[in-house]
Amino acid sequence: MTGRSRRAHTRAVALVTTGVTAAVLAGCSAGADPEGTSNGDGAGLTVGMALAPPTLDLGATDAASVPQALLTNVYEGLVRVDQNGRITGSLAKAWQVSPDRSTYTFELVDNAKFSNGAVFTPEDVKFSVERAKNRWTNAAAATMRNVKDVKILSGKTVQIVLEKPSNDWLYRMAATRAGAMFSRTGVTDLAKKPVGTGPYTVSKWVPGQSLTLNRNPDYWGQRPHYERVTFKYMTDTSALTNAMLSGGINILSVVQPDALPRFSDTGRFRTIEGTTNGEVVLSFNNAKGAFADKAVRQAARAAIDHRSLLDKCWGGKGTLIGSMVPPTDPWYEDLTGVAPYDPDKAKSLLADAKKPHPAIRLRIPNAPYAVSCGPVVKSQLEQVGFTVTMDTMEFPTWLTKVFQNSDYDASIVAHVEPRDIGTVFGNSDYYLHYQNSAVTDDLTAADTGDETTQITKMKEAAKIISEDAAADWLFLMPNLMVTDTSVAGLAKNQLTESFDLTALSRD
Image (cartoon, rainbow, N blue to C red; front, side, top):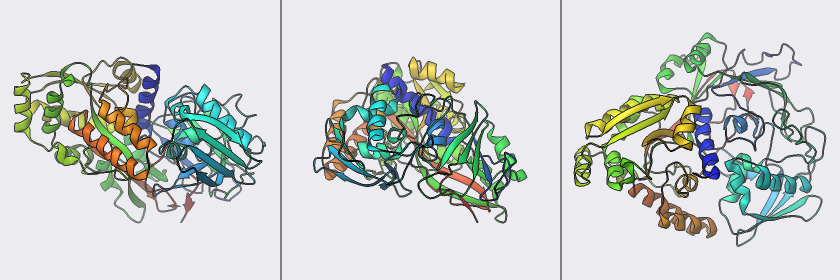
């Protein structure tokens, strides 16, 4: 496995263990200041997440906990994605795309500056793009590898020229950390002291425990409601649920479905249900072992009763999709009919493959959805003849054994990076080791073609992958949240890497 694919997978998994299983914990009621001081305007909010960021440098790690706290809040991009999946302006107030989709011209806002006092200029755009392309060590750097040149056209206009046309590039600039803008004079200690243009600045970081953001008094845009936000990092979701019930928590995100009935008091709690990009994938090692055989993979898909599984392990919350494409993408198709539940067919496929009792290792991380769904998957596979050994391991161990060493046959992990079908199935070095030239051709044509071609080719690629049983898609993770009734403005859908604090307010 190449270093690039290893980093890409690290990111996918890190996104899962923070973006999907993270819970939001407030250590005091809305309006209270956790640091003990306040100017009385918006006061403080405390946010709890499951996993702490290992660094504050967006380019040094694939861990989702970093952009989750910093993107949009501390760092901004030229563009961003709204709750409807549309690309809107941020540090760019307008932009133009050339007819061949290879040249992007951005007109910058007039008064933005970094938290170190430096004015945001086209030179910073050039610096940020080139730095991500040449110096970042995570998967997000791939977004910039297609950049040929960055041209400064005027004091407020910058043009980015791609090596080849891309429909995907602008979306990744909007939805992921790849688009974050940096100060040319503010990158000496990004691991500890981020410098961005956003509405918050980092005031205190206690690694593994907490991260405190203060409202940026010189922010160029609309001032956020809360003066101070402290992220506190905890791994015990039961403790988070109990803390919410005890009255010390403002927001709980994401809530495990079996805990929802505990928040039925509408006088105290508000339940919000939205969607995510998180496909919970039963991933197969396509390169070796039992699942190198397409018939065995197809048998495994036919053995899974997805509706029953969703009801048993995630409270019926979520969407059955049958592919690596969520309904929020324009090329979504319901492909659940490609591999319907059919245990007799599963047994027949195994018999025809002369592997009636294939032995597999199901190796899963200790993420709540994987721990909950793993036994159901194991049972259903065993009912058609599989012999399943299931291992549950800590995330770092899972990264080493499954991701780095491909020492597995199957796993369960949620991939939440936006539009990641190419990342997961377009690179045979990736941990699933799937390879199909028709798919890579479709993905290339989709990225370089016009809008109609993009939609057509993405649909073709998704269908081929599903028919090949390159993996099984258990369900699309919902975005389940509970807030106390004082909190307003929480985004319903989780479609980017950011936990956006900017719209939060108080009812």
